[in-house]
Amino acid sequence: GMFLFKASRYLQELERFQPEMLAGSRSAWQQARRDTDFTRLDKAAFAAVASDSIDYAVMEKTADAVVIPLDAGWNDVGSWTALRDVSQQDGDGNAHQGDVIAIDCRNTYAYGQRLVAMVGLDDVIVVETDDAVLVGKADRMQEVKTVVSQLKTEGRSEATWHRKVYRPWGAYDSIDNGARFQVKRITVKPGGTLSLQMHHHRAEHWIVV
Image (cartoon, rainbow, N blue to C red; front, side, top):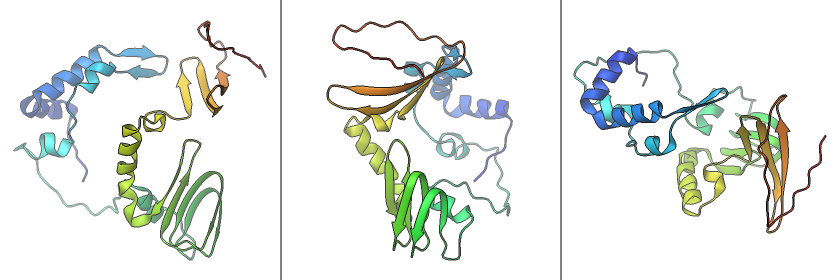
């Protein structure tokens, strides 16, 4: 559902039902630092805040809420399957974004940053990005949470980092890496400055374009 309230009223209820959560959030905000266009909360303080949804933390406990039926064609687009359902589709129920070729496919959704070619698929979701490729049956796409949990268990960087990482001075994209090397594409904003570094155990070679 959708919630509508004044921020001050919500904070009052949070103070009443989840005081520790509110205190921790305020601590993370008070220790936040500005980073050009970003406000970065204090990592340790925010990590210490209990994880809970607004439904369980406040709305199920408050005595001041009312429920009003609303027929507005609402869809929170909370999954790739939902995105397929609200996207423009062809005559076979396929919805594609990016460089996609689909032959004899039905009820599919594909997002491709590179060329994605599909043949004979039905009710399948394909998502291709620089970081990873996700393929699954449409009715099981919510199980992507299980994939994320496994990535975290295995200590995979994909669980927390994109291949392209943004910094105040610009960004870098790790385009290739192996056991004894790494290749990055670094983009520096006009006027941006990188910190000077020296490494005793590896060599760096820069090509400026």
